[in-house]
Length: 184
Image (cartoon, rainbow, N blue to C red):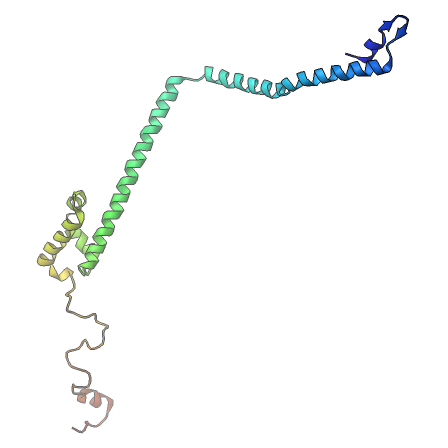
């Protein structure tokens, strides 16, 4: 409602007073604002509706069978990836077990020992740890040279010679240095 509309009303010969027009417009403004509140989100809803309509139009052109086939392909790829990952983990675990067991058995050359073992049978075994130990024991009996003897000290350890330090004759050493023989 506009102010000019109310000013054109006449009661008798007189126009409506300004106070009455203001009161009418204030009341009308309150009514308009209360109704506007109900429809305040009109623009947002209209945008959502347009977006939903565009999405629906996009679905109309979609080939549902192709989507289903693609979903099945992705499912199959995911399952294959899980199987591959499980195989890799099992291989890493087996290799670690084998290396630890060979080291524990004091194997001299891990690569040579692995070459003599039936790795496929050991890998397929249900009780890998026990079977690997048994295979290494058998290999130790057959090819003992691949394993260090527990009694042999490493070559860099002190006192690995056959004589005690200071107990042997040092005459050859004295002679090579040009020194006289030691007094006994």
